[in-house]
Length: 230
Length: 366
Image (tube, rainbow over all chains, first blue to last red; front, side, top):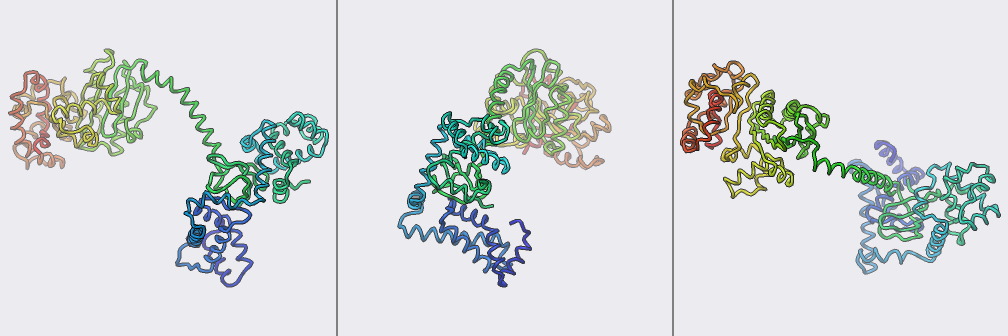
């Protein structure tokens, strides 16, 4: 999307000529566009783990590349139309298949899709929320007060890990239901101000890492670059 | 950019999501998701609430702080002496104090809102009025056959009504365009009622007056008409008499109610008689500016013979109208004979003006 329109035309020409690496790069590059187009049609977020819609959307985008001609207007517009119609077809088919109206299927969908894996994750989340409440914070506080800058985030998560690894600090943290600011600052070699400012985030981080399940932890560890510090 | 996140909590308008980078964010609410779901989202899905919330919170505080002051001021205008409304078709109101200083300006519609300037508060009323009229003229709201309705409501006895009228009329003479105007005074009751309906006092009273004569016309219909369209109806009313705005040079003679142009009387009996009741009239200002006397003569001639006096192009239009006027004036005369004595004072004063003016009664005729 960042590239000007004329270069898109050139890229498509090359892809059509058989440049397959370019094709997959191009599709990857436009994934956000595909996702937002699908999301507009379905009015839902796309499931990250297994989404029929996403694969249909990506196929449609791929199809759009093959079928695109200059006379059809800009590529983006054309691709949007193709994705739209494929997704609509899919939704229609789905609703027919289930023999319920689209309205009903919308309501039914979450329960159908939430498999056991998700139940586990959901329990972890509930646990985490309760823990957080015990420390006097809500998820909203977390959204508001979490550090936005990646360096600050990394720093905070490092502090959290250090506290977690230090038995006295951790027991203090659990007993008083708050971060032992002074001792932690000394131990981590940071100022008290940094800890105070990020106390919600650090608390949340510790709670997630010491939580019972693995799903949330995995989620942060596998995919989160900043969380990979240790 | 595509991001992936886990939905931690679903709220009414947003989701709280933890993303892969360890960020905790809010996303717009969408159907079909559930807590614990991993979703893909774009930056456009991020719920932008904090900003609005902050702004609305500030706004709420501001309103809370300002509202009492505002109410206090509007209920109890510190030393307001008069409210003067000006309807062109943008409508607005000046509030002035006993020194004729503007203490508040209020626009009654969007167009007027664009014309007024808060810096005018504190300036003398005539100056401000002139700036407003000039602005309206520049924006094309005042053209040659526009009607400006100026209406004055005195809130106490601090101001002299004749003085305000003079200042108003003098100010209007400084505007280059030849528009017609109506100056009218309202009482406080009318102003209150008008403000309730968000009308200017002038318009409110005008509608009322028109409905006295034409009760069949609903107020809504009147509201939808502009002043030009109301012109005929205005002519039917008792109090809303359209005057032609005279140019500055003729100021002395033209002040409708103050000037007593006795010498004009003798010269121009005819138009005088013809227009015993206050009829709207339009003059050719170009002529007046050149020479009043000559002007009168010319007008007189024009009444008799349209083909003469084409020195200024504008005359032509007026002459055409005069055609109609001749016949109208006959009607007027009949009517005016019946009018009560009270009217005569006013008529006399108006004679001078009428002499010059070529009579603009065609609307009546039409």
